Structure formats: C-alpha cells, structure tokens
Amino acid sequence: MNTIESPAAAPRQAMVELRLLRDEVAALRDQVVKEAELRLAAWGLPSSSEGARNLACYLSLRSRDLNALQLELSAYGLSSLGRSEADVLTALDALLASLRLLCGEPAHYPPHESHRAGESALRRACKAVFGDGAEGRTRIMATMPSEAADDPDLVLALVDAGMDCARINCAHDDAQAWKRMAENVRSAAKRLGRPCRVLIDIAGPKLRLASVRAPDKHRLRPGDRLRIVSDLARGKGVAATLNFPEVISQVQTGAEISFDDGKAVGRVVSCDDHGFEVEITAARAKGLRFKADKGVNLPSVQLDLPPLTEKDLADLDAIVPLADLVGFSFVQRVEDVVLLDEALRRRGARGACPGIVLKIETPLAIQNLPALIVSAAARRLTAVMIARGDLAVEVGFARLSEMQEEILWLGQAAHVPVVWATQVLDQLIHEGVSTRPETTDAAMGQRADCVMLNKGPYLLEGVRFLNEVLGRMQRHHSKKFPRLAQLRAWSRF
Image (cartoon, rainbow, N blue to C red; front, side):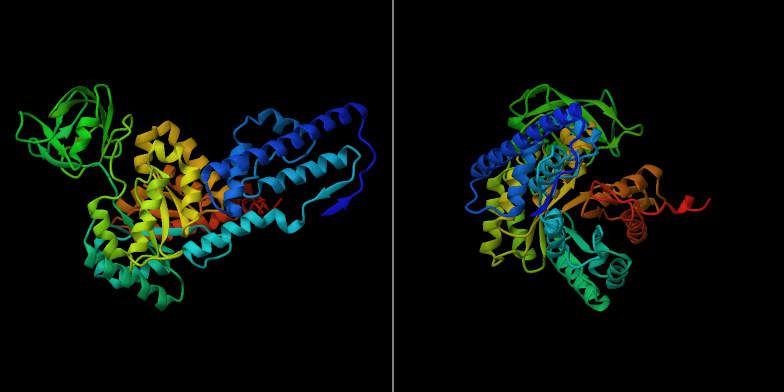
C-alpha cells in the first residue's frame, strides 16, 4: 500500500460533505463484498476465479442506482466509478483513499499494479481465445462462405487482410466442407506466420420454416394470414410447417411471431390441435419472400426445446478435431453449458480446448448470463457473443441497444472476451458499398474484443475496411475509457 499524509483540511462545509461521502462509499464497499459472497455461493463454485469474484462484485455494485453519488463525487474531481468494470474493489479502495485524504486522514492506496490487474486478465483471456494480436487490438472474425472449402487463396487473402478467427457455420455445408475450410485456415495462418483461430458454430434449436405451401414467389405483407401446421396436408391456403413441430402445442393466442430476423412480424390469432393462424402486422415495403428455411422467432413464448439437437451431437463428432472454439447457439441455462462440456469430453476434448463461445440470443440467456459465464469459464476457455440477429427480435430493437452495452460490461467484469456480431458492415459485404450508419456501428464494435462479419461476395473488402476502422478507433477508445490521443485534424493554429 502507498500511504500519503493528508494536506490541510478542506473548508468546514466541504469537510462535512466529504465525510458523508467517505462513509457512504465505505458502506457501499462493505455491501458489495457481502453481496458478492452470497452471489458466489449461489453460483455453487467450489473455487472462484478472480473473474468470477469481480463479476459478483460488479453485479452487486450495479444492483443499486448510483447516479446521485456519481454527481457528488465528480463535483470534487473524484472518480465516479464509471469505468470500474474490470477491477471493482480496487476502484472503490482508490476512491476511499482519496476521500480519506481529503478528510485529513492517512490514506492507503492500492498498489499501482492492481489498477490494471483486471484489464491484464482480460488481455490474457483474449490471447488464449483468439491468439496473439497487437496490444489491445479488437480482433476480426469472418464467416466462411462455401467457396472457402475449395479456394485456399481466398482464405489466405482473408487472413492477410486481418482475419483473426474463421467462423464455420454448421447450419450450412457439410462435414467434409468444414474440414477443408479448417485446413485452409490452418495452412494460411502457418504460411503468413500469424494466428487464426477456427470457431465452429453448432446450429442449436434454431426455429425455422421446414416446408411451405404458397403460390410461387409469395410475399408476406401486412394484413396477410397464414397457418403454421403440423402437416401441410391439412387445410388449404398459405401454410408452413416448423422444423420443431412440438412448438405448436406451446403457442397460445396473442403470441408474437417474427420471420427472418424481423423482416415480417405478426401475432397468433387462433390455435387448435393441428396448428395456429397468424396475421401479419408489419413487414418491409417489398414484403418478405415466404419460403422454407426462413428463421422464426416467438419472443413472447419461452420455448421448451433441447439445447443440443440430434444434428448438433452428430456435428460435434466431426468438428471437435477441427475447432479451437465451439459456438453454442441458443444456450440459455447452466445445465446447457454442463451438457455441452460433457459432450465435448466424451469426444476427447478435455481441458480448455476447444473453448466455448456462448451465443446470447434470448431473454432467458440474458437473465442467466452471469451464471452462464462463470459456469463455462470454470470448465474451459470462454467467450460471449452478442448474437444481435435473434437477440434483437427476442428482446425488441429498442432494448437491443441497451442490452449490447450491458453484455459488454459484464464480459469485461468477468474478464471474458465479448464478440460483437450480426450484420456488421452488412451492405458493404453484400453489395460492395458501405452505409454511414453501418460504418458507425463497426466503429462502436471496437469496444468489444472481437467483431464478427457474416459471409457475402465482398467479404474480403469488408475485412480490410473493418481492419482500418478498428485501427483508427483504437487511438481513441479502450472499452469505456476515452483515450485523449492527438486530434490531428486541428493540431495546427
């Protein structure tokens, strides 16, 4: 500890206020520690990592409204705790030391190195998950197109352009294609002398239209009605079946329904033993093409589906020897994490490899996120993905902006990397020209530890552009911390 003797006492009124602040912060610290211990006990961890302990402290700190306290602290030029995610107790201890000093008492500051211990832990986790990278640089993940299986030059170009992690999606292609993709990534990384991890996503219980009965090129528009049925042979008119038919019995009248990540939305107007009828209430101007394989969300229904499907288990047999990381789609409960860990161990994947990327896509996953993180991290390397496609539909687009911020904070508090994903630079990747809003979105992603791009004909251009954007933004931000780098545009008189 660094001990500093106090300067001359502050004016009387200020001294009264400072002593009240000192007592309030001291009481806050005690409450944070006590509540964190209770939370750790509830998580049932036999031994807690520093990340789990800090996350427990952060959740306790943020369980109360600190706005008034922050304003009072900032009025005295003191830390408002606004950037305390990675080292909660250190931040509180440093603040208490400053308050005690101002109150005319000896102050014991935490050791200097402890102020960066959480950030250092997160950097080590990023290195373990994504490999070596430039200090503090946000990594780039790119989703492999089918051509990546047979075009090693494309993969080489992607790695050379800045791709740090190649994402292979088990919802597309097959085991032989995944193997060739992974081999091309390994070869490119070795040739260029830079690491590139392989993340393979298992599809999980993603709800989709299985089969469709409709006129050719039919589009859904507001006012349209259709039926979701167990068997297309029943009834007439526009209808579809689901890849998980058991969902039909879980839906009630009034439930919300969304197709293709919110491109068309509706509500359930009636139900019977064989299906339910949907009225479309909103859709994009040109309507939504109604065809098989479109994604379906029922945000107001807590679906009871298996966390690992038969396809997932079969896919794990193929991908465990190939993957550095396994993407866990639609994970929701701690029991899901245990199930995947056991499935990996049965296939010979012990210890930290392959790691798990928790894809957060539902309200229940958000609710359980702290427990999901500590449970996964206690078993193997762990990262969190903000899967904004399904998540936006499940929680609502207005709430998404808030939730993606909060997930970033929880990841930093737990010293676990977070991936900013879905529709980043989407128009650039699909059409070759970026928009202003998506460029800003990509820049905002710099606060995450990795940014994911989906596949498209201009993926290589997308990786290059994102690499430049992230490099520029690194000068100005580190997580929530604004870096006061020189403003070059106005550096002269």
